[in-house]
Length: 422
Ligand code: EPZ
Image (cartoon, rainbow, N blue to C red; front, side, top):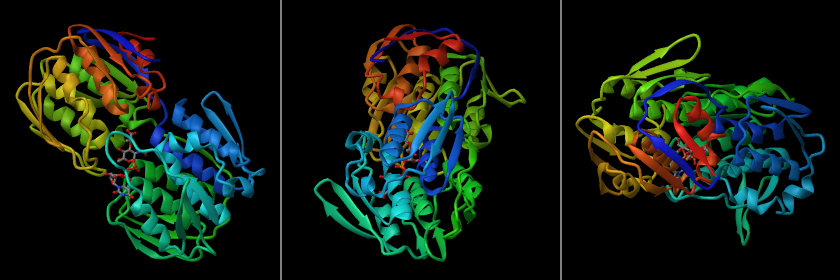
């Protein structure tokens, strides 16, 4: 899908099921490498990054089969030579950030890995220094090579590790490595995101001994025998948040079935403060927006349970239409306001006052325009702006959006948006 066409300005109405979480499934798939036999992962979204991870697992000798939303990974054919010869498909490694979690998993399973550097993206530099410093403390050694990184260990040993920042990816990598280390590992300053809880849940189901997943201190007793397990990936909190924002921007009422409302506390607080109705029902998360919303004042992104950086762009069109002035500060990524010029083109009164800050004066209406997605969440935010704007909006560059959304056009059509992709 290259471009999305939207005829906006119609209040939303309808219900849609929320896909499985992209950021939860990728480390869980990496973790299947650690378990003997077959793991069955339910509710796997159909996304490019998931397909890349499937390709990487197959290149390592695993058999991977999909039946609808269920993926079966069998690790019996795993091949040490492949992991060492640096010929894991470079394109699959470089095209997604999550390939970095293979580092911890492969060090655990094979003791030595050659890995191309993972892909970055336009939201900022995304270094991996915290991953490397933490793994070094488990007795892993690193050498820079022309193709990327060579990492090896003569046997990982548990350690007490304090992360300089609660990095989601570094916490995942450490978990994947530490379950294979000798003795106990304590991770202090760990990320508390729900995706960490999912990874700990899957590893525990396989037989790992982990306590504290989802809190800032995680304790891992290493070297337990891991066997394949069944695990269901929760709904994607950011995709649920995207359709919530579409409703907040365009008005109307939506029911988001399979939305992980319990993981969306910070978003709930902002939604309610702005004046929309948020109801957690047996059938799903029900959102209703009638009158024009009021600004929540200031939004500042923070590690979980704070307001998620991935929701920041999605709220920009909502704030652009809310009554009053809003300020948004991005504290996680250094460069996550690429959509500001496009929102301006649609009539938003938004100014970037600093690399990490924007100021918005609410306006009553946005107007359709031709705009371009430059990254995943910013692209989805432009689609939301289009759903709320009067007239036709065309969003080009939609390949980025497909990295995180199975089918954003189908889902929004279920909610009454006049939208199609070509
Ligand atoms: C995960 O990225 C998510 N990606 C991101 O979602 C999400 O925005 C982010 O966590 C924060 O919640 C996946 O799970 C695949 P971090 P990750 O390590 O693990 C700096 C989306 O839209 N840092 O917590 O890469 C880093 O530069 C994506 O789905 C270092 O400096 O996030 C960033 O500023 C985008 N050195 C901050 O920490 C390191 O070694 C947070 O990064 C690692 C990170």
